[in-house]
Picture (cartoon, rainbow, N blue to C red):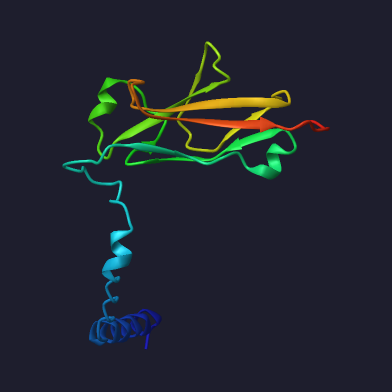
Length: 157
């Protein structure tokens, strides 16, 4: 039998075997309690969205003892992304970013990374960091202030 003929015969056998095999059993559905804990998939428009909120953890203690302030945060009912401007208000699910002010400074910065805030070189003593959850036009939707004390330490980061 020519080589091409053997190939065609093998392909026909594989195709017949694959087509006659019974389909895989469907996956068991997740228990309702587990499904209720998940937030909506961020891939389809939501007809109504609960209000956004900001959750901020206290500084990580081991790093704070070394003079490094690491603040973890998350937004609920809003995705943190670096997208700005009035047209982004129509995006669903809702998007935004944060504004950050350290020690009541006259200025702040905006961040759209969603990564923890890392602040270094603050002098020993009490400090506060204000974090505002903002929509794409910089309107503050929720805010938190974290107060902490940087201990006297040796070494640099």
